[in-house]
Image (cartoon, rainbow, N blue to C red; front, side, top):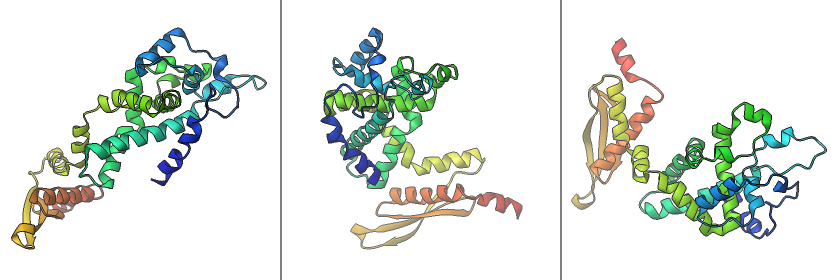
Length: 276
């Protein structure tokens, strides 16, 4: 979380920048004006008129453009700084949404779910759905190598766009965009279940190996009747794969399946059994 905090500490400083660029003074995006169709596309995405157009020009500026310009020419700023800012804004707003949506989830579960939503593959998919690629400024040599449609360029551009929206329209504008084009694009409950339904993952593993279904057996009960703790073992073909403890049997089974999956990711006890 320390990296996220370091990013967030820069937000107020950057919001106070009222110039038409993202603030480092190393060249201007004005030499790369946005096409009318790009301006219309941006307005459709944000639902608002985009006021600081040079911010969006910078957000769409892939670093390959700088490599193709003559050394004595004025160099615009690439979208890398806005990508840094957008990454922090995205993390903050997705974290807040998960925090409110899943009040019983602990820090580890919230962090895992956030990383599943905002990983580079997911961000590139969101960008692809928006049609971001055709609006990027790409250097000619990089464009010939199809950088425009690469996962890296799309994910970076998507985060940079969020940074530009934040600076232009504030946190409310960034939240509108993220709720519409990130949270609104995923089945959040399915994301959570896929991440934490270890029993389903263990069943899938058994099926893929043509093994019998996993079995769960309560091997211990502790505490008074109204506050019991159950210990459950997960096994398959007579081999104990994992053990879990929890106040509810279903939760203990999930913990046992989680331990089993951790074991199966590093070893294969069934191969040893077959060799005997």
